Image 1 (tube, helix red, strand yellow):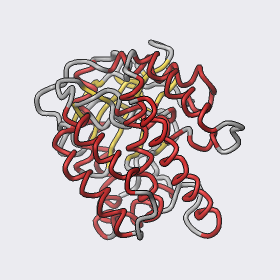
Image 2: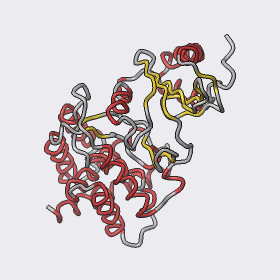
Image 3: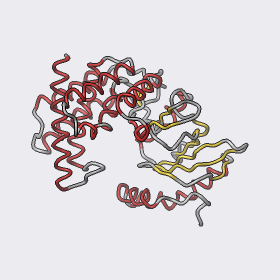
Image 4: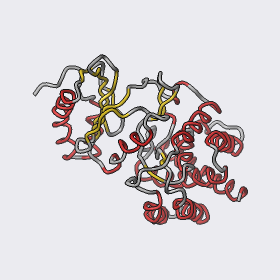
Length: 319
């Protein structure tokens, strides 16, 4: 079969999928052109631009019958993507792109087309943090009953933190890991009736026409909205490297985000500390996007450790 015009699979995406998923990923990639062609026909769309991709899915710009611009998103079948369409349905376009069609068996959606530029590319400093915070507030709507709860992940996350500490020879002081475990076991069980994005960083916030900014790529979880603050802080970690006063710079982000999202600053700080501790172990296992090994990875890991300790101290002072 030849690929439908305009729907060639990006080489970088194909390579990453095979590296991550092995034979199952290769088999899915072989089927992907057929999946795209069948969905285009079923939903009355024609390709309208170059295919883009994220980490786990391809984005095909299309035109619907009547000329409306949209995108077809097809993701690799993974449980982490199960509830993305549920989140979009619950929001109904409130702060996020609209969902037009869904095919859960194919892990496919037809979505409103937003811009290609992200908040990370266009805005910096306090304004970027405030935009993300205000968007978080709008996305905090009642969660559908079927969505997974943070509470259900709390025990597993706590175990993973303790296991990671032992696996890597206890690189962080015990109080730092204990604080992260306390956050996930205590705060992880709160606000289970509230929908949260689950991965709200500046790269997942796009320019748009219907609203200035729209969220994409949600996990679709239910729990404490302050959880998303840690995701944003991780995405801005590199901006802290040159800070004259790291404590001041970190607290500035925490306070701007919490105020814009109308969240308690202490809760935001505690979730940020949890994410930072998670990141230190993730980096040791998988490397970071900008450094997979060598001295650069060592430097980033040391900085991640320092940030986790600092956030623990800041959270202790605010308690």
